[in-house]
Length: 182
Image (cartoon, rainbow, N blue to C red; front, side, top):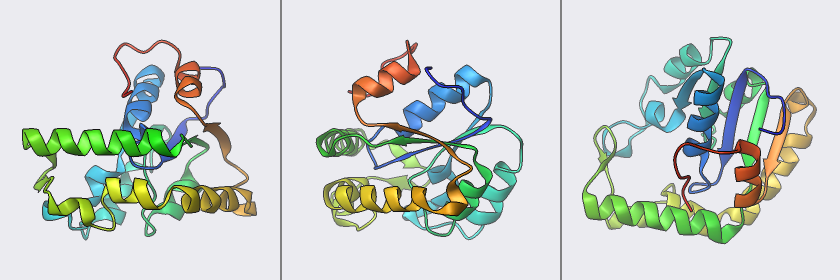
């Protein structure tokens, strides 16, 4: 890694940008717990879990963790206020979109459970919060929103690492013991 990082890391970016892979790698290297926010958020049938915010608060109460999150509105400020480092995977449109499509296709074909009680369906692709739909329709808008958010005074405590290409991600992480998604 090319930059000293804090002890409470948030890895964010569009669906398909590699958030979970990067967060797992960073957590493993730093010897801290990895928190996948989607696993806390989603209940059966992709419903939001009523205990989500309370469980998340308990998870991030510790002094060190590495969390991956797209940014649910009900938890974004909570996570950002507790984090000390934000790793933004700001990859080109086609990279995140292509990965989201390939991952969804793989899950559809295998029948693999995404989260407990959650499986991909053909009709799911059209849901407004589906990773493929989000990657397809929100890339530019979310980039502008993220830049504006990072400029706000309340987030100036964050060390920001913005990675704009797969090469930058690989340079930032250095050698990894497993292949990150292409």
